[in-house]
Length: 152
Image 1 (cartoon, rainbow, N blue to C red):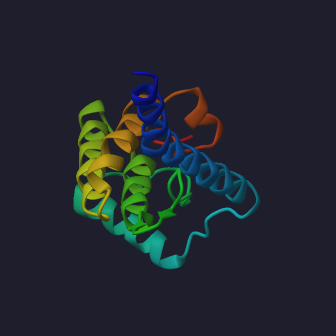
Image 2 (cartoon, rainbow, N blue to C red; image 1 turned 30 degrees about the vertical axis):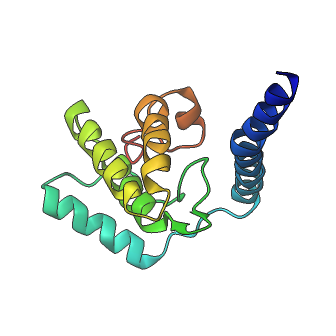
């Protein structure tokens, strides 16, 4: 009985704790990198943001589009590149709109994350929860990534 518990605990630690520690290390490294090396907004990103406004029939926000990548989340993980998905989401958040538009932007984000790599189906609900529940609160306002951040 004691041997079975020991084997169970070791298996539990290996299966759950080690990946969580690895993700914590990657997250910490990414977060500190974001603070010192912000994402660069290219002219192509700005042009794409303007094209989004035209396609959606939206007004141009007061502030120029600024990309920050995946806010408080790594832009890349082994086997996953979130840059394109996060750029699209940043543009939607910059443009803003009503709550239905935000909900749709977050759902499209989730669906796109699912397609980024082999663990997309695992990461998508986590990233979706982050944007759905933290995408328009005090923390997102401090880092200027809240819904409608293009408007003053």
